[in-house]
Image 1: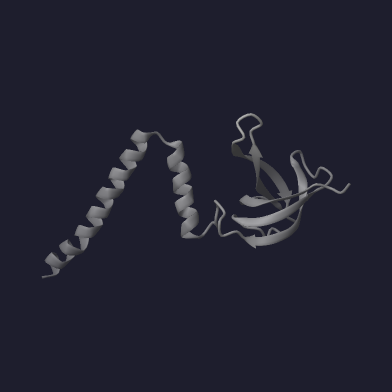
Image 2: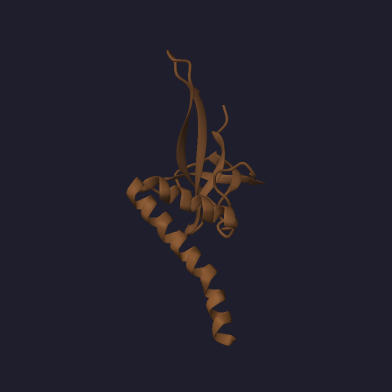
Length: 137
């Protein structure tokens, strides 16, 4: 029997030297309820060329322990997944996802406070051009 090969999405890259964190989603069915649910596992993967970025789908193969937690080595990059929950670090989609994740960890009161603050900032930005026109006239 061959070594374990996993396919997942890079969720953390560029933080550790030659290492990325890959998240693998497994869809399971509850034995009694017969309801499907998703379980996520994180694995550290050796990326010798430091070429992977967040949101990229990869295939990794089990190997000898390379460090305390690193047990997989990169087999191949499968490109970017358009349906992934994570995107590249520089895209506006990644920024939106980071905000959603941060919002999920906040209380409702904190989210409401931030929403009001954003509305006030947007309103003040709308009024700023009007004030500059009035001054120049």
